[in-house]
Length: 365
Image (cartoon, rainbow, N blue to C red):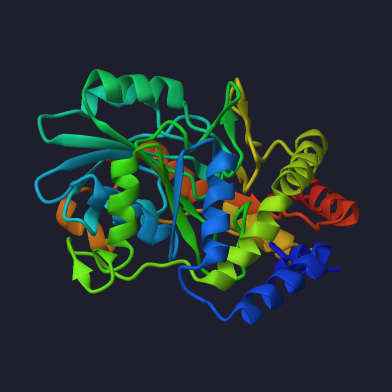
């Protein structure tokens, strides 16, 4: 028996008829860029998040790049973010010429709010909070810090669709919040897609121009923009995925609960949800100093896993110019060396889950 790390086909099969109806509706419309499908998705997703505006773009990476650009953040500016962020998050900063300033994560894999203020300088313009693995960051605290210091706040919500703190949705704290709809995400397209959400009409207008060559009116280019437009077909697919968001959250929560109650191997440390947060379990990230051995053992048992992420941003070759070295951010480095992600997705069977639990429990190192 083989348990895939992720099985997009099984997720598709759950709602195949709906996806196919949406695809045919879109194809028959004869309009494939910036049309009714995108407008409807933008409205529905803004309502889902609880934000005034949603701007669909090409992918999550471009959402981040355009967010910083819309806020005027660039060369000479610093942006504080966590040292264990995925490289895409940091690239959103550096693609605009700004400098990332790293602080360590906490025990929930999110930015440690207690360490932010010490990193603020006269060059700091923003804080980027990355909600990793489906776990919400402490946005109440981070938002208060940003307001106290007059800083912009950007949320990277690529992995946390539907996550909340004390009932407030992630994506509603930032000046701009960025989403990826890569197929594996909690709300996934059947290709690449992303979005920015904001409560500012001025930022909405600027982001819409930035995604469309800097143009608000055809052939009139007011600002320097790019081409980053979510296509109509992906907007149609995302409306189906949006309809079933809570089905996925429920199923992944059930799987996570089975893992948390069933895995009792002393060689692994299980993830935990932060207080007053609802974890949406995009990734089930355990920790072990025997990561490679456990991964090989599970593969021999037919269980496929993944590592998120084996090299932290400050040690990536592309960021050598920042001057960081091994040991500068030991928590992020430990996470990079010890994290292992177990399969968790809507469409995964209880038999699959039990196979994973049994395989982890019989690991002896």
